Length: 155
Length: 281
Image (spheres, rainbow over the protein chains, first blue to last red):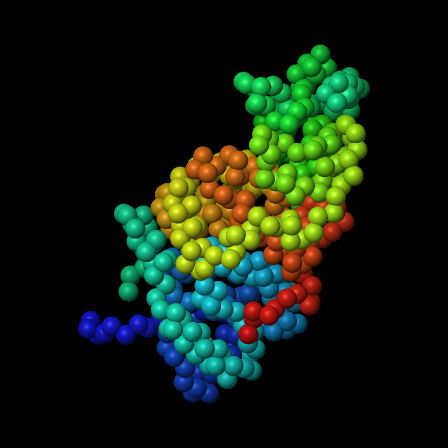
């Protein structure tokens, strides 16, 4: 493996417990294959995703991020995904303004019944980010100078 | 105008309507002003008003030291008055707990501050008393208000990244930007939280990016463009560009302008079922 030079992107997926996580689970129970680059983090609701989580994922070496939750109207807590959508509407352009390619942070609505859509989405994210290459800019700022964080990403 | 201001201040203090006046006073040189806190009617002559009154005094509404002085009357320009609207909406102060001395303003700073270039609040939109001749507020088109962003928005992804990395590299994490901000009022800021350490506290590029992005993001739909963060930044980081970008997106997506209308719901505390979701798969 040490000789391996082919780039495999690290994707962090923030999923809501009620829809997308269950959708991903369905993909698994249905024995659907998808690319294994994704690390799933389950949260109660997309409304609870602080944009700082996304920055943190990049700090810890993610090349791409997927944030996914219930379709509008389906939120287990009624309005969490609507609030989340508002935040993303301003956070995404902010990152873009700072020079972060918006393709590295993708958003989707995937319900518990959409195992197929999960497979399709995650494959899409992995392919896009693989084509973009490693997030060198961010990895460079992570490692300049003495490493201040003892928990910095180790692979 | 100064006479009218002093007269009104004296009247307010004598009648015990307020306990203290937050206003502008003379600074160490004629081009500088400083905040003054007048508690005695005989001191009202310390109050001044001129084109060097750039500061946003509403920042003292969040400080324990000034709150201790009692109910304030505060001298505000049109831009600063927007802060009070946000503070009221966010339940930080009650309307009746602050007496607003609005001053009409034709722009401050020498040279003219950036915030004044597309000003549409020469006369404050909220006040108890208006000092100075009323000026008709202009209507400025969307594009013109955010014109400052154009040259940065058209840069390529790499140019943007390099530009901001160069800017953020100057950050020394002094947090002057959040100390001065009248809307950064959390008792415990996210940078102080270290279990886990959300934002790297050292002045390292990694933490500098997350701090500056987070600071700006926490003002999304709230910043009223007083530009104080940028003015106080000892490293001259153009912080207001980030704030302005967020204001632009908030207005574009939610048709909301912070501090303009006390009846509007706060943009980030509400939602609409038909909010934009073009980017969501």
